[in-house]
Length: 201
Image (cartoon, rainbow, N blue to C red; front, top):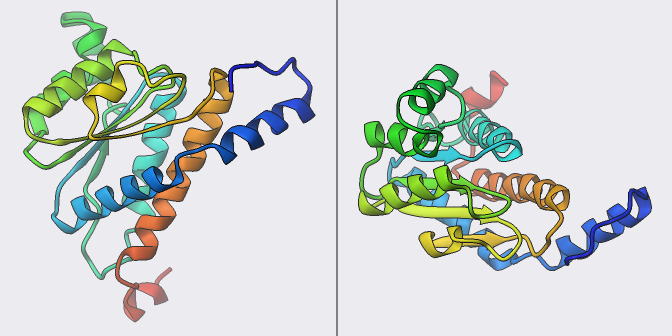
């Protein structure tokens, strides 16, 4: 889908419906399964992106970390959004460059088989690409969600789901929906909550 809607609500939602119907559902399920495998192996998931993608990184980290907290007894999902520490982000941007704000944070933590989860509408944000490059060298698993034609990001990812649209607002809407569908698949496959944990909710 490459046509931009002209401001009419009905046309916007019709485009949203059409693009949603063309999403790579099997690949989205595979991303969820990769996150579940990471959880079961006690690996850490690192989320990052810019602008609306930064907001989604924080949102998705909350869903995975808090939303699954009562599943599987006491075992917690290890997840961190690299978008949340403003002092660290601005320090690296000031002392190094904005292109390094995620890669430099990953250097402190990333381990083989961890998961770097990149969110980028264009797939060409340099700071996102730098982080994926570092993650790949560290032997981690790279996952991405993007739009347009996938940009450079798709070449750095083991799994990359592309929203087939050139409308950034449609892309961002469906990135959020994809994150929610991934979360539901992950949480539904984690062991049922214990009775004790469920009683405290």
